[in-house]
Length: 254
Image 1: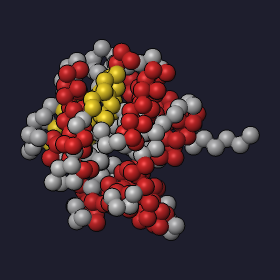
Image 2: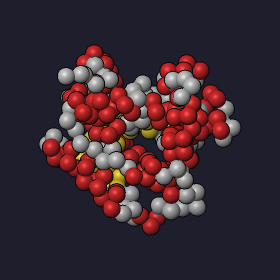
Image 3: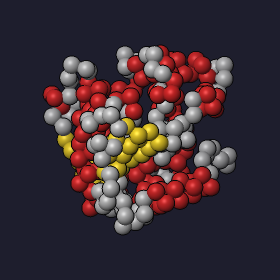
């Protein structure tokens, strides 16, 4: 039988070791954002296998059936792995997520406000830490979107770690070197289930337009997953010192 896995045991072992080193047991307790999508489910499984201290937090956007399905899928994972004791769910008032800056921006700000509170509440020492499942495909989208908006090239890429010093919050992204294909491969290897976000197909959203139209077109000429990171390397750490409110620094988030 042909092996279609794109991620080998060595890569997985390296990820597990890096998580153990970054979050020593008894010293740090990061909040892992779990949406129910494949990237967050794989991220949660990596933390479970690493045997470090952490919390899982699901933000329910309360926008209808799909959000209920994603919440249910997050809980399927949590209950299947007996992680109820480290799981929290926050259900938003959906009517409050349609602000003047649009649903995506308003929802993101509310989501990070909630995650930040949980991160600070569970921090053992130092800053509160939020860990997200952003991957290389997300990074490419950020880069192309940023360039198209005129953002300076040294600010378009997400960092592996963004520190908001005045807010005492850090956002970590340990999966930035993996593609979505890699992550699906890991989920398949571990027989995990996940929820597909139907809104990710709607190209009325700018990110989806780049995801489904622009980047695939560019990939017909060259492999952007390999070439773009050479031109726009992923920063290791970005420190934000000039802003009290991390939620206004949306360039650093999806």
